[in-house]
Length: 125
Image (tube, rainbow, N blue to C red):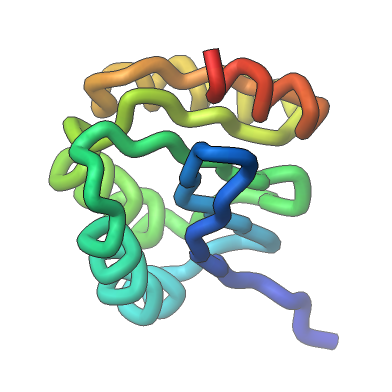
């Protein structure tokens, strides 16, 4: 049985705030990034403000294949300066480490949350 994996990206509005919403699940592959990078770049271009807030739902994310991890790093280096805040939903120990490492590549703040309400409150501060 093949396990489901992939990334979905959207833009949501909650009250007067807009967010880039990224949901990742399973073990991400290089092919996932080949498909998703153009969509992510299109979504980022649609956000008029240079100060982007993002909600990343990683609760069902198991990790990355090695080449996909490299793809993720390159994506962070290219677009990391556009983000003011990134709230990551997850609770696994490795996600805490990943959130800390993410701060090296993002101009803004990165925090890990196990509760969506708390994540959205933090994004709005």
